[in-house]
Length: 280
Image (cartoon, rainbow, N blue to C red; front, top):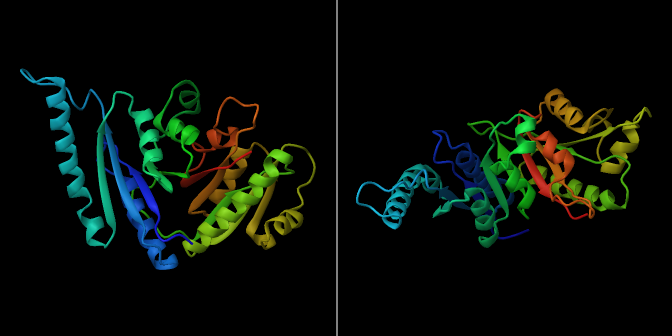
């Protein structure tokens, strides 16, 4: 057990609802309730040239400073409720032309335990062709990333963890690690744990064997045939999962640090997604 958890919240200055902040506040309160963890929030916002456009007679440095001060005041108003709940909040406002890269660097230098960001819905083709902020976070962050889709947080009663079937040497350790992590998350949030796996062959999945391997009851697991992202999404809907946990595992021979299933599944699921980086 750690004494304090640092929750890194990414704000988007271009939208009205900051779901990441409200989720960060709820998770901090839940950790305090279920684990007696004095969680802290690091609220981060990166502005770019569009946010700091110089006015007539003003140079870029002055425009950036003014924009940062304006955004800081905005965040101070946003976090008033969070602080009134007894949560420690630090604020960071940064200017960077490459704000996607800046977010990843800020997460690393702050020693964050988890990142929370509003999920930006994209067609799969867009994610494949464009370097979105969600993609960059999932690909490059060395800590867990939670992408939230629901503006108003709710109590998490069911956690669904996706497990790789018939693992080879690369995934065997990752499976054990993600099951352990998901079990800890469920316990920390007072939730029930469920697991899902999928097969691409025509072999009939053995639900009981899968349940035994996860140390779960048979009614807490799903084993099916099909594309991983489709099976995971369908199971999440069927059991009404409140949080889906998936691993980001890249094979040593892969140039990408973002696992294939993690990359595909984030747009298939309607609920919140937590992506955990796992060593292969």
